Image (cartoon, rainbow, N blue to C red; front, side, top):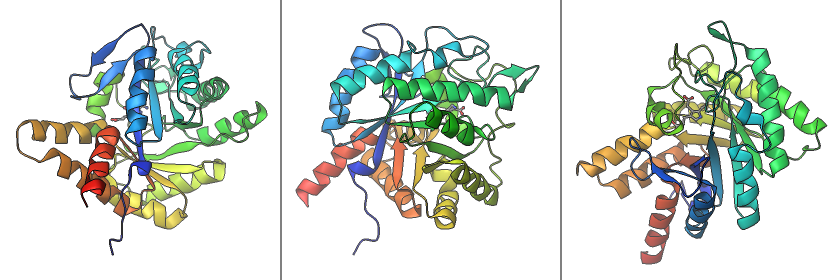
Length: 309
Ligand code: PBG
């Protein structure tokens, strides 16, 4: 009679791919998460897939960063190369790519700067270029996480014009300016060197605005709407799902992961039951899919539960 179901097929595993060879670099603030070079990534995805997780979300850590994020849209960039390697080794795994500039800019902002401000319209051109290069490499879906205005429309139009009419867009529709991204910024080395992201990310005080953002993204051609972070914003997950009826994904972000890890390491929480409860709650709120650093571990725990029932 349970109203909500959680299974490995609901989970998406985010992964960090770094340039270089034979690298597995632990992320200090995210125990259990590593930055992997391409061959290591390909090996790791074998583990992810055999746990029953069907999709991965790739974040790239480039060899060089510059003012205009050149490696983001380089056909030989780290993500583009990783996508080709993954699709060859694991054609059955859905490969989603993060489309944003912050991992590739020397200043760490999600777009190109004009003075101290991110230039929205210049940035969306580079994002569209990035999306096309990911699509050309063979990505199954792209996930723009930058929060510029109008980017979904620009990306959709340019994907269509370059022969990628069928490529789905998972839009970070409601991405809040959140403290819970702290550990990710260590992992991707992308904390802004000056200022913050409040100019383009959402105000934690606003929920109705998330619905407007979601509707705008749907109009512009988004296929899936994402809410992020997940646990502190379950009301937003619910609202967006109810208001749009569209597929909704929720991102259990780095800070949510690290909080549970830290408490578990201290013996203050039971990791497995806390994780499974948090994921079930995100599903209950209305998320069709969950992006979580715990995806693979949770899939294994779920399989164990199913076999002992
Ligand atoms: C970058 C991006 C961020 C995250 C995903 N994409 C960081 C940010 O906006 O500062 C955060 C993910 C996480 O914390 O797990 N556009």
